[in-house]
Amino acid sequence: MKLLNSYIEEGKVVIEKGNLRTRIKRWFQVYWNIAFIRWANIRNEWYFHIFLAPLMPLGILVFMKLSGAIVDPGIALYVTAGNAIMGLIMGPMQSISNDFAWGRQRNDLDYFATLPFSKLQLILGFSTMCTIFTVPGMLMTLFVGKLWLKFPIVFHPMMILVMIISGLSMVGLGVLFGVYARNGHHANMMNNVTMMIVMFLSPVLIPKENLPVILQYTSKILPTSYAADAFRSVLSGVVDKTFAINMVCLGAFTVIMLYFAVKKLDWRVE
Image 1 (cartoon, rainbow, N blue to C red):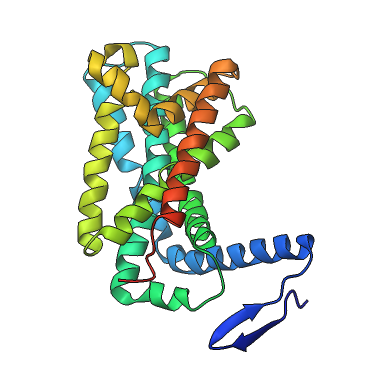
Image 2 (cartoon, rainbow, N blue to C red; image 1 turned 60 degrees about the horizontal axis):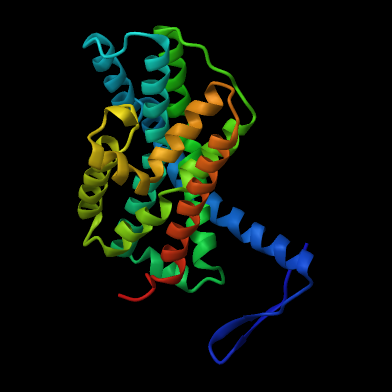
């Protein structure tokens, strides 16, 4: 079915606007087409995301258990949920950072610039596939932790919302890295440094009250703090005012990051 009429005027593609319903349908169709383009590439490396990506969070889980840091089901849930949400947040960020960094080297973004879609559609299309392929590794970490450490979890419907927003929360930062990195290797270095900062400066693996006082305050500027807290709450079946506040803060981080990625950057010029 034909959704739009377009023509060339002064070397530019001009798209005729339809009614609101048609425009919304067109927007999501273009978004889905971009997501499919990313899926066509990532499907060749699915085994990495499903089998190799969970190795680090599972390794941390094993280390903390064998070192005696996990002594009861409450701490087991805390550490496992933090590990799982770290993978869900950092996975899409690192993936889109590499996509943009290597894309600039291969001039992929120059090609995308000739097509009639927005930066937000490009970012969300790529991020959707990255997040989808990160979810199996996150669930594997969660299930291994539950079976091995024997802590109870509740599969609340709000878990899906937490996963979606968490996956998008640092995508904007990944775009920044990808655009400003000199190459793909430089982007990887920036991703690794960020992962270390986020892991040790936010209460993902260590309870907030056990952090130094200054880190208890600085952790509030990291979206992982809110994502991990919200994820632990929903796994415990507790959806209360604190959960709502965490989700609002996490959503605010997501919007701000995407705003800077879309409005303040122009990766279409060198």
